[in-house]
Amino acid sequence: MAKSKKLDLGSLPAKVEQYKGLLNNTVEYRKKWPEELKPMIIGALEQIKEETGLGGSVEVKDQVQNLESIVYNLGRSSSGLYENIEDSNIKRTMIKSNGALIYQQLFNGKVMVMTMNPSIEGYGEPKPPKMIEILRPEELKAPFILRHMDIFLSDISAWEDYDDDAPEGKKQGFNPIGFNRNIEIDE
Image (tube, rainbow, N blue to C red; front, side, top):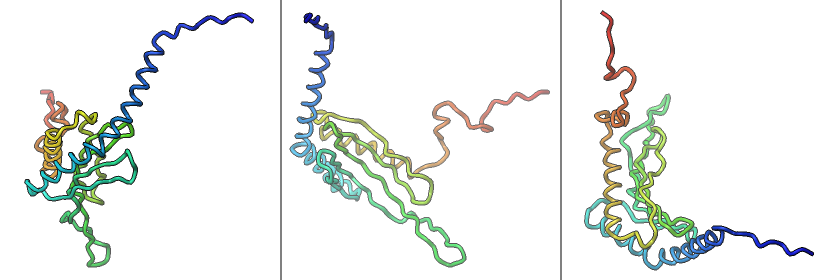
């Protein structure tokens, strides 16, 4: 029987070591959620709520271990809009979700930070959550939570103050058809 030649594995061993390191990181990152991150995030959000009077609630969603989330939820309220029910004097209140700031533990132990804009049921489609960033546990510090809350408040304030003063298209240098177009007129 002939002896087989030894394969040149090239960069494969280095990639295997990198992969093992990533698996180890996941284990370590997951340990930091209950020990450090969860109490720090909850404490910071509770302090913001108490000291600013913003309202809302801090909710822990922990049905799936290692995929937990902490949500600063501004709750639901009447939107002030009512749907008239056909052929009756009945009006249906359209409920408004007031928005949320979300810290979601990912499968690999990192933390994704998202905002959820307000929405009114039955009035358009709610936007999907907006991702702010994904952080390793050691990167998430209390001052970041203040920055995230600032972004969240800017987003929900922009939603509440929606008008056509600066539509998205104009911000990007695009003018809607028929508006502010340079039109050449033949004389």
